[in-house]
Image (tube, rainbow, N blue to C red):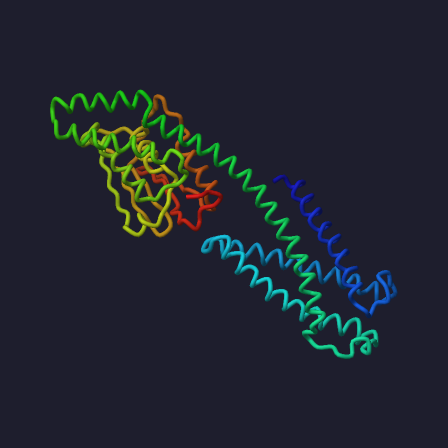
Length: 362
């Protein structure tokens, strides 16, 4: 967002709050029998108006901040219904607290200070009528903010859904192009043809793994993310084809725990695209093989390969890594990281839990 637009948004926000609080101020004066009419603007009336606006602005601002913070914390652990219940409870407690504070300040400033204690002779800290009135006012404020908050999030979700759909279509296209394009068919069938005459058993295994790849492509064509366990099954089938094609020139090693496989999600085809990039962008031979390791730490999946860049990559689109980066930005708050030395290249994919995924259904 441009700075000017941001300033305009903040100004409009506080202008709206000011107008709403002014309206509520008159509602309160209509309820408060210590004022003879809505337009009582003697010294007490003017000071009360200023006090109400200032107190309301502080309470409203803190309420907005608290709502955003609670939502941000709870979204990692709870679904929307439970978040709404917990947030409602937190706002109710907050409402009671500022009602007590308001009662104390209002009584001492506008009754004791103005020698009008007789107008509220039965004052208590949690006056029943005052509490009911403040709860009603709080509900108006909370309802107004909730409407604005969810309307804004609905708009953002609409924009996010459109962006996600475009990226999803693009990722599907890239994944399918790499796996089903005529060049891939040609290479796969060429290897299979030679295997049929040399090693019938290996040819059978090759056909089985090749069918797994295309079955997986069809199964997840409408998905945005997949469980890591499912992605690794697909990757193993792809690794088998690569290993058969290049023999001892390429090796893969996967070191991922069972818990990570079970509970982690990744953008579909992301590991396969990184494995393919490693093969496509590096020189290798039997004497100097390409070694690709897929490991993990507490926060990331790490795809590491020894580095020996090709000088010219024929037919490379150059958008595989950027595609993965954008998809992570759309589905979570986390970002991929790159680590490169003179000897190795490492792509770090953040581990995603189901509760951390946003704006998608899985």
